[in-house]
Every structure is written in C-alpha cells, then in structure tokens.
Length: 409
Image (cartoon, rainbow, N blue to C red; front, side):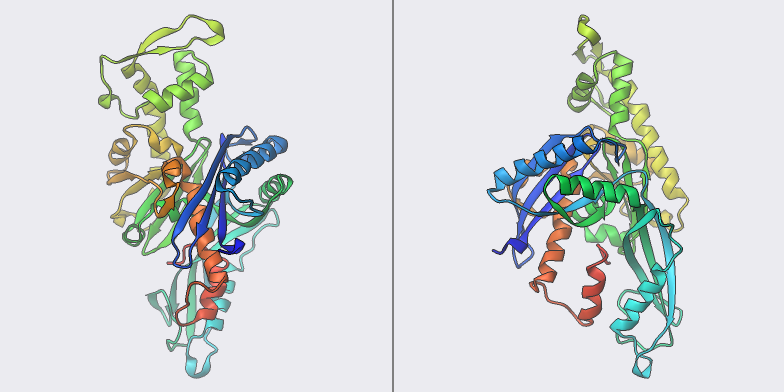
C-alpha cells in the first residue's frame, strides 16, 4: 500500500493531544495502525496560549502513534477548535450558462463561489464552504442539479470561519513538531464523520462534542449541516467545580469525575461513599456519592441548556427526529444521555466512534471521536485523489467541491 494511503488524524485539545494513524484500503475500509495521546497544557478553551507546550504535546502524541504503527508520517489532518469558530449560511445566485440552459459542472462551481463571496474580515480565515441544497428556477431541495434545465441557479451553503491568527499558530505548532497539515477541519464536522449515521443526518440531529475546554455543536437535517457553534464551557469546568466543592486537588478531581462522576443525582447509590484526597497533604475524608452528583449535575445541565438555547434560535429545529448525539471525553459521564433527554425533550445517545478495524479497541472511546473522524475524512480525500473511488456523473464538479468541503450531503 502506498504512503499516500496512510492517513493521520490529529486532535489538539485543551487538555490532551490525540493522534491516530490508519491505513485506507481501496474499498474505503479503515484499519487503525497506531494511537498516541499526551497531556497538553498549551491551550485554553481551544485557543493556543503556549506554543512550546503545544509543540511538545503534538510531537509526543504523533511519536507514540508512529511507534505503535511501525511507520512514520509527514502530514496530518488536524482538527480546529476554539470559541473563535464562527458560522453563517449564505446564498449564491447565477445565470445558467450551459447550452440549452442545462446546468453544468462549471455552473455549480460558479454558484458555490458566488455564495462564498462574502465580506469576510482579513482577521478571519474560511475553513469550509459546505453546500446544503441547490435551487433551479426556485425549485428547492435539489442535491445534484447537473443536467437539469433552467435559467437561474442558486446555492445555499454553510460557511465556517476561524481566527486567521489561530489558524497560523496551530499550523506553526504542527510544523515545529516536524509535520505539516494537509487540511484543517472544524471539530464538530470531524466528529460527525465518526459518530453520526446517514439516517440521523437526514432526519435531523444535534451533535454535541463536549471536550475539556469547549462544547462543539453541529445541527444536521436534510443530509447537510445547517449550523455549527462553540460553547465556551466543557469538562474542565466540571472538574474545577469538583475540586472547589470537595476541596481536593485538580488531578484528584479529574480522576474522581472519570471514575465516580454522574450527571444525574437520582442515578447514584445513596449509600455510596468515596475517599477524597485533601489539598496540601491534608487528611483524606469520606464523601457520599449524592454529594458528588449534586456538584456535577448543575454544571452539566448548564452546558446542555446553553446548547439548547443555541439551537432554539434556528428555524426547522422542531423536526430533529434523530435527537441528540453526545460525544467527546465528557460523554463518558454516567447519566449524561438521560439528562440530555430531559433538557432537550428529545431522544439522546452517546456517540461512539465507528467504521474502523485493527487496533480499534484502543480508540473505542468518545474522546477519540474527533481524531477518528479526521481519519475518516482524510481517507475519503486520499482515495479520491488517488482515483480509488469512482465518480458518478459530473465528476469534475464533485472532485472540485469535495476537495474543499467535507460532508457534502
């Protein structure tokens, strides 16, 4: 198998860097070869604040993955997170130029470029321009208008932008670690690649990737993404609440959260107790599990309520039949799906990564959703570049658009 078919996903998070190396077969099957993870103190809520610490963490995670995989890599597909991410829906309109007013691949390229032509400040960088649907002479809901006849062609697109400074700094950190970035992918889109089913995207679903520093949100319906957002709150705030509420060190609070944490007080054993380490060498003491849950539940509920308020402003969200999918490290918190069902009044499930084999059991964890999603996305890109995936009609347009936007519905 050629080196071009070795794909690496790199998730640079607030508390850790995860790297996944995979091998993509011509059939599209993905075999995981190596996984690496190192702590990272170089980011705050997705924003890079310590370049050297980030460089060290990136190099450490990728070195671990390379050692396990028995191969070296040069380029990665990296996730872009942080509260600087913004999104907007835009529309482009052109006159059909094809013979007999038949829509061509050139027309689709021009209309997407027209929708992209917004007044974006120089401080912003466009990450994605994602087509949602096309309209031919006001006929809506068209996914592929190639060959149709009409005079007027419109495109509805979803545009995601990031801070240009954040993009440059992230690229610099990866380059100084000895690697290059093939492409930056917004974290909610990357996670969607590994945890969402096609039926969910068509019926309507909310993806919540609750990481340590931020909660990344994406709303899909009709097979396309219609909204993305970032909430500046995540699992680190829960850990901090536990540390303050139980007067215990942050490291101990994180371990307590992972091992004994629960998002719903009614689910814990009222008679259960655990030992809490003291701060500064103070004597450990016993605390009941309901007390721990009473600290955890309000913060988790606050995060979910903020997400609910974010999607409540969107039109059409009353038909999100597939409900809520929660992933990211905080998704491992017991009872979080049940709490989300109560907050959103929709069905909810935990999003486990899927679609891989090999050492997949090592990455069978919601905290690897982004890095595995980046591998899925990168695999699709690599196979199409190498011609391993055949193209339907309008190959030229599809190749152009998929080289620039992930998850075309």
